[in-house]
Image 1 (spheres, rainbow, N blue to C red):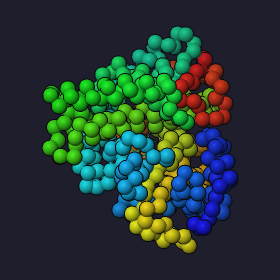
Image 2: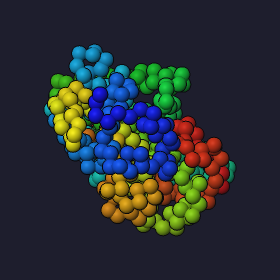
Image 3: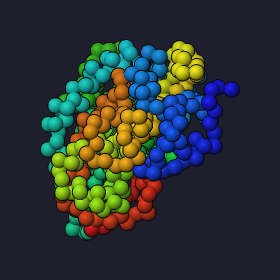
Image 4: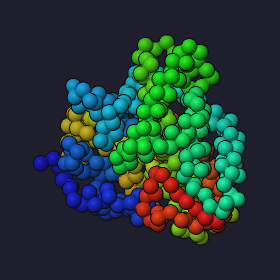
Length: 387
Ligand code: HEM
């Protein structure tokens, strides 16, 4: 028996939709910091803010390394269940991780992203111009996915025509659809071609930066893994955040009007939306050594799941954690992670969310949801509004 055991109660919790009513009170009401879950090979689910924060910073004890599917080591990367393809830099430890972050940092810095703001605004306005006259908008396909996919394709240095393919490839939850499989096939072909071309003539983009590097571990395969991680990260996390946001605003009209009227409030609101919806709700690690926590012992080789979403509802850190407070300050949420793997695309994700929210609410302050998305996580394929 490994410490506190949880089964049905945790299951029921995990199946609840990720909206405001997903309170995580189950973990926090009795101060539960972490619990052993025997499903999926067994893992420690870490829910307490302080512990998630501590483990996320301690990359030496909690590794992100991915050796799956060789089975030669217990290192299964950060996905649950483990992904068959390694994601880089997400599933690397130092020293390779440090080398990659130093090559990639400047393109994703706040300064670089500020320079991209006019481009995000232009893309958003263009999408709105195209559809606003119809009085109806599929906010997923025609706006959010289009803007976020185009931005990440441009940064990486891939053809922009792939934006629609990327939207299909992002449909991987809960299982990969046939459409997503076909899209992944096309994306991989496009990545092979892009790496070949970039090796011949490296451009002024992220793929060019990687091709110019002399580090031997940055092989063509590694570049493809990095590009795929960026394309997927860039076209799923901000998209999930905005889908949850527009679903929420569609069903909370007074909050929508509040945000539509107050531009300053929209700045802090993005942080609160990140906290409440936590698009990357969990991320896994593998323990590299035995770690004693309270009365429990995490053994070397154990899987440890960091509950960023649960930590963001910990009442020891956030007063009334299940309430949406757009002016919450301070708001030290963990939605973008902590430590060396802190989200590389954080500035881009925030800029996209802020701009899409600003521009859409300025032009469509009043709308109603047409899709059947009342109070559950929106499906990642459509969110229709009418106005
Ligand atoms: C609302 C938007 C976003 C959220 C909530 C989010 C969330 C996260 C989180 C929680 C992590 C930490 C993972 C860990 O600790 O293992 C992470 C890492 C990462 N994110 Fe994001 N992300 C967002 C946007 C983006 C965007 C727009 C991109 C790229 C275009 C991106 C690319 C990455 C990459 C490459 C990593 C790995 C960093 C590393 O391992 O050093 N993310 N993200």
